[in-house]
Length: 186
Image 1 (cartoon, rainbow, N blue to C red):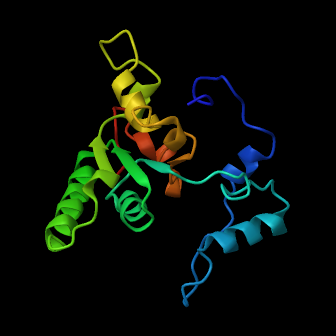
Image 2 (image 1 turned 90 degrees about the horizontal axis):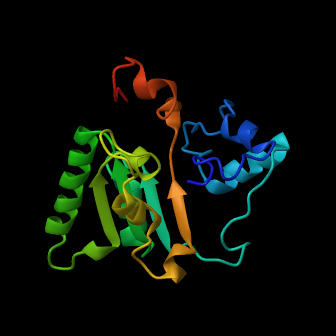
């Protein structure tokens, strides 16, 4: 949010890494090329700046917010397999509804030994309102901001928060409003 609000800038080189259009993330016929190790190796080969993992920084990932959670798989996987408090926020109603069906199906299908439902929270909302006031309002949505940033949880959880946004196919850029008349995203 600090970048969005102009409090901090993007360091030189970071923008190039973010906007890299190479095909290093593609998967070959054997399923190779999509691991974190492959991504780190590709960055090293390109001479791009490297970001340290949470273990190298001495912190542990304790929370995840998936911005644009889509059908919610990353949120559910982090919450239920990694035991990380996980939240997702999605703008598109259809994608959020699919995520809810999957969530409910997992809980129901595993009812004899269900995953901890408190570890996963999916919400249909507009992330922009955490930073800018919604139409007709004079202030940003503080409750939504608390949700996204885990401000309702202890500081020890907040310190290990990872904000995840998958910008595949420029979904947050050009594709996000092709019509110019509101949310598009396909």
